[in-house]
Image 1 (cartoon, rainbow, N blue to C red):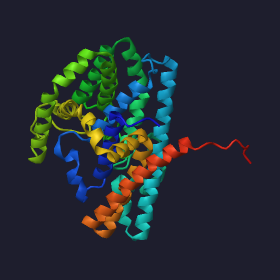
Image 2: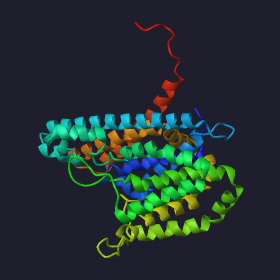
Image 3: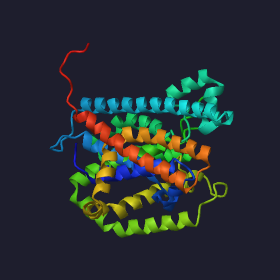
Image 4: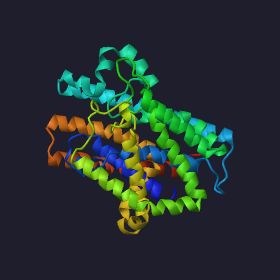
Length: 366
């Protein structure tokens, strides 16, 4: 088990924020940083995934691992994330169906786009397996599956030229904004909530930034000097968010996605705001770590076991939504739902690490 570090800490904070925000309307949602900016925890989660890929695909001496090993590593992780998505979706459907039976309320079968499965299970089952039909709030892992699947292209290209990798990524991002490229949903209408063609830019930025941060003292110096710019962008995001100042999608010129705050296509405003957040808070962990004690350990533990924690958090957030629907919500219900959920996330992280430390039996299987 590795010691707490900035990457795991911020990833843990992103996981907590996503869990709380995935229970819409709860009392504590208003206190998450996602309510005070244009971007939110999803951007941080994807960026840190790219940063982690940069660390994982290099040896302790900093040299890149063999190409085939990198491809197999990313393929293995892709399969793990895909398996987690299928499992959590199956559990979520069972929870929705079970609650509908318990409360004798068939309208719950429409919860978060689940109606298609119960109305047409044959086609929708195929869509679930293909990841083209997604439940609401269960659409980050499909994005992650696609990003990990294409990551080897950018990782191997970056070893030849980081500028070329960034150039290809920006070109794909720009074309997706202009032509609105996205993966269509099926069965049913619409597109993916997170457009992989745009969100891949954050993954690549995270990977390249990690490499530059490790190798370039000049980049580290300039990132520190740009902290005031980051603070200005953060304050601007707070003003725009609190006063709900957003461009009208029907009034902006074409290509409209460049001028809106669209989350699906990671519009430039969201991207710029997120980069400002990175600049403003890049040195904050060193200040917080000695002062927060157990909180740092808790969040870092979540970050170390992000896939398991995210999967359990998705199930718990759905459970929280259903409990609030059943009880009508309220401060005490929210305190129980969020408090027990945060405890369960911490237990999940502990349990995953306990299993990895537990000595395996040498006796032959029966």
